[in-house]
Image 1: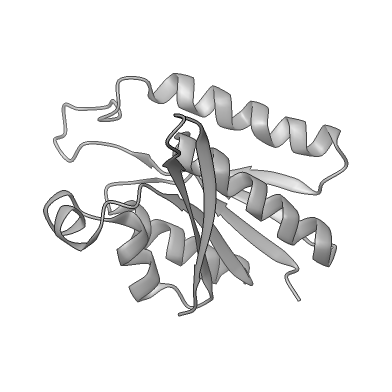
Image 2 (image 1 turned 180 degrees about the horizontal axis):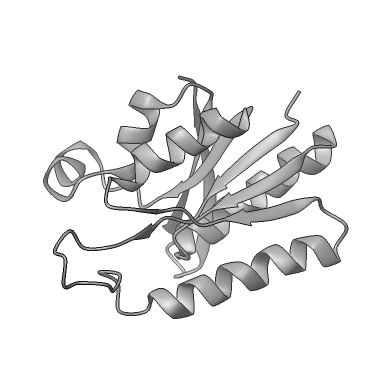
Length: 155
């Protein structure tokens, strides 16, 4: 059913939680994981750096996560397209190019109002992806522990 599971990651805790779901889907269906991390550059010509200060650390972390998947016997690869466009647009385009069966991503679960002001990668991806999108939310429990919650939606 899911031959190609695209895991959209920015190196955040939400993305880490989404990796667990992506791995579960890929292993259950005998599929592969394609990790996609958008290296977004600022639009100004003089700006050759990512807008995120810790971008280098994020890329290293994601590379390690993909290597750990491979070491565990999971067919996994990493794609890091560079683009000035919104990350959701790049991920949706990459999913279409690769013929992904599903995109798995993390979400902060900000809600409609906060998402409208801050922008929402997941909300945009749900609107434009040509395949199903599974959004995984990480919420804090009363004891301060992280709790993963799967929220699925189809395009």
